[in-house]
Amino acid sequence: MSDNRAVVVGGGLAGVTAALELADAGLEVTLLEGRPRLGGLAFSFRRGELTVDNGQHVYLRCCTAYRWFLDRIDGAALAPLQDRLDVPVLDVAAPGGPKLGRLRRNSLPVPLHLSSSLARYPHLSLAERAAVGRAALALRALDPADPALDGVDFATWLGRYGQSRRSVEALWDLIGIATLNAPAGRCSLGLAAMVFKTALLTEPGAADIGWARVPLGDLHDTLARKALTAAGVRTELRARASAVTRTAEGTWRVATDGEVLEAGTVVLAVPQREAHGLLPAGALDDPDTLLDIGTAPILNVHVVYDRKVLRQPFFAALGTPVQWVFDRTDSSGLADGGQYLALSQSAAQADIEEPVAVLRTKYLPELERLLPAARGAKVRDFFVTRERTATFAPTPGVGRLRPGNRTHAPGLFLAGAWTATGWPATMEGAVRSGIGAAHHALTTLGRHHEHPPPGYAWGTRSRSAV
Image (cartoon, rainbow, N blue to C red; front, side, top):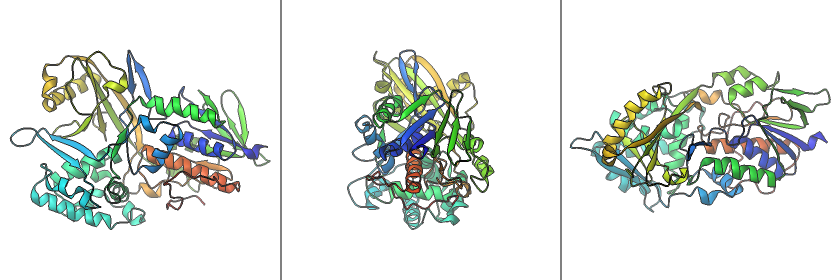
């Protein structure tokens, strides 16, 4: 019976999540992925003896859906969280020389959990720290789901609450660019409020940071594929869907180069432009709005030194083009006494098309400014990875463009971080979208998952086609 069959198109986090949820509820699921691997834009590849992540990905304790995903694929131990939020922030251009500060929390309740850290934060003046506290309290009162916030840019709102240019640079954008992939002036207030309120103003430990201590491919491809197989999902790699059509009998046909699959349920878990090309007529009121959802790039700069130049797992930087630096030595398999650093550069429009030689000339001197030990070190390798469409652009007004999981076409659902999850384009948003698509599909079929993922709020408001 085709009613018990489902096809999920796309093997990123959204598609893998949807496939697992549908299979766990008893459906016969086929997952199609055009690439030779799973994981979407959070993957690994080989470069000589190194295993390299295409980009540095982190998550927070408040990312309950992604944490469920890690548990579901038996990978939580491989991507542990900090015991407590602790972010070293190095200002290389501070008066009198480089100055190190830290953003860390204590065990007090919100908002006191950050008060002592903010009071000692050396990159802001006393008056600026006080103004940040007032803005944070005002931010706490906002409802991120309020549609009115979607049309306002975050920088305008920060200006209303007395935030100086320095405060935006040294705090709001320090966090916001990394999580939203846009500076405050190009970011929807609704999405910014969601990030800062959820991570910093709900639970004391919500912003504790986690990241993979193994290559991302070990999690999002190897362990994910193992979990899919155990759940009974048929996973087809190098199988790109070319058409999705509805038969006269009301079932779906999904065509690839090699076969045509029939199913009662289809989940399109692909980027918005690809989804637009596969959607049948009438599935959305205005499918062209998907093409209006912009994209934003992320650049990662990879440097392998012949010796250890950084003695902490990561830090954030001010007064330099460098944003965040991570030590990827152990996870990459480098084992000869050198050190491998990855620079994560979000909102990288200015650099994304620059030649490697230009980027080398730009970033190596900056690393030497930040890390004195790098000045005498030999660079064994320097390369970059570019994700030109890494995320959807969180611009003001994007909320009205993001569709919900359901479509007007019975049995056809959408998933992807670009759908109306209420979150920015993160691993958390991708997993939530897959859960949401599966939930709506199962509800349509009259089925209910006995054990929905913990921490996922089914009632989260989002715009849907129906």
